[in-house]
Length: 271
Image 1: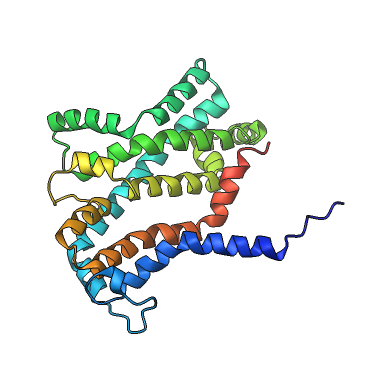
Image 2: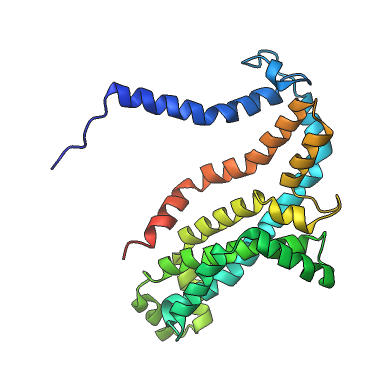
């Protein structure tokens, strides 16, 4: 067996330097959030005397936006999985006529610029009364989550042995029962993967939030930070504290679901 080539000290040093460069903005964001109010460029390199007033201000001003983003992201995840899982199962196991055409259409939806979709949705939402609503944002963000979920879930469900599903049918389970009790548990890793990425898509969305909301009643955190910068230019500790709070849910989910994501992404390629 061939041994993996050893990486020398220069490669390690280069890797550490590159990692430090990529993580420095994150460090400076956290550092600036713990500084007193003022210009972030004049802050210390390390918060020897951390000041948490920025977080108090951020929670007071942007707490509602954080809750809004959380509601919209969870709703988009639930809707995307509810629509994508049965569609992916049908395309993977039943292989109806026109499957390739449907998949081509799904891929095409991923290529349409978001600004085109947002402009089209604005006119439709204005007629339907869905502007400035949770349901409107959930439906809009699901336009990106559903196609992605179908592609990921279908690639995995194609690898589920047909004999397992047939055995469930022989035991008396209908198609829906077999899907719910056999296919979905086997697809747990892929479901978690698609749920995570759909959550991240929705959580980081700015274009739909900017286009489909015109009041502060329903305002996601991305739009809240954008408007917050203009209103609190001198309070960089509060701005950076808001950015830190907005990064926490995504970071926690990525750490918790990391092993499921690795299994979900690669399992569809192994037959």
